[in-house]
Image 1 (cartoon, rainbow, N blue to C red):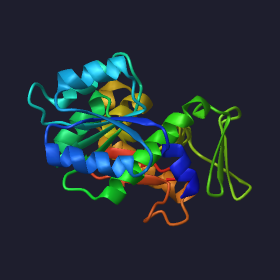
Image 2: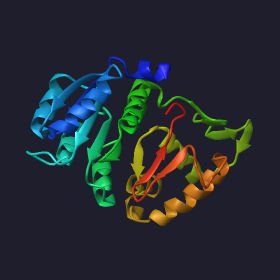
Image 3: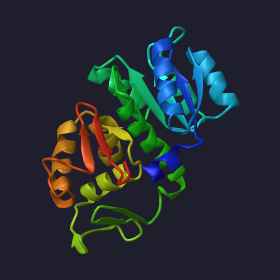
Image 4: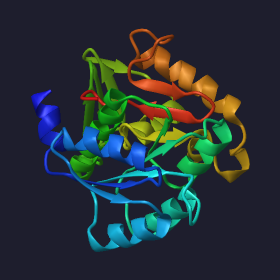
Length: 238
């Protein structure tokens, strides 16, 4: 917990939310962890604030008075890679996919608890701190080591034989720890645009990869499913 607090302390979070009660709840939760919190109640105000005082994390509602939150995501992504955590009452899979495909990193459905909000914030702030190391040659989690330089994976010191697709799937997910990657994004990266709707391909390969990586493939610790949306690699410190 001490390390997590250090990861949070001093970081700047921009909360873009038009409902004053929710904005206050989010601000109090984040401030309790030592974060510097700025607030905006509209897309325009949020973009101005983000441009003048760059945040380390954006917490964003989708239903804003002057525009849709997805418009914020698209414009913000044109010049910033800072993590975006969406908070929204829109629970449908299509809405989640739309926001994530636009460039959001995560999606939390209202109502939510302070503990979950802070856990997500910690994960994304930690990822931002470590982003320079995201392309490191070695990635380790649990008893698994991914050696990017030699395209090898070991588990418990033993070489794991992955197919080329399984290796690329693992490499894609581990390169963006704690971020949801949509089915469409993964399919396009693995097989190209013509396979963007073939989610069953992905399920088969993910199932096989989990059998080789996870101790309990039916209850994965590292390669988790965001139902109807995509997959996420959960970092060891989440």
